Length: 118
Length: 110
Image (cartoon, rainbow over all chains, first blue to last red; front, side, top):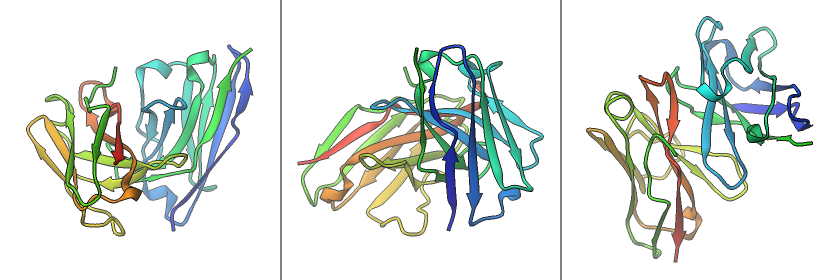
């Protein structure tokens, strides 16, 4: 069974940094594209970034380019999202997700809340 | 404003058939697969339909997807109370180089 467990969320001040982690199990992590998707509470879904199996291709939504960095450690079955220069509008539940390929999402973690506020 | 356009709400009575539309453009739905997700209240989204019309194992055949040109639809037949949820469509966008979602449709079972 595919399991994705996020950690590292919490309250951070505007301009601050936070690193999200996702522990993956139940599948061969190194064989799949992985993604981060976020959702402002009560609002819709927004794709944030994805990364190829070997990390050689990465895509970001325009609103986080230059501030967020997605990475992975296939030896540890872990996905990361380094978030810098955080803004109030980054406040959301962040989901770790496994993809079929670069263009899709098949499985979701339970999500973790990031709150950017002073 | 979402790149893919969905109606904000839909409703039906138990046993009815309802459809939810998703409208896009040539750079997303027109040239890539469409995916549908169901999000029950307070839970993470779940894949409902992949590659336009394929159902993952465990998804009832009451759920079906279709695509034509730059639009797609999710149909739910034999509506049940447990189908009350938010539904999202998604596709890759070749111009934006990213996954784009619809704004979501809240389905109410009357």
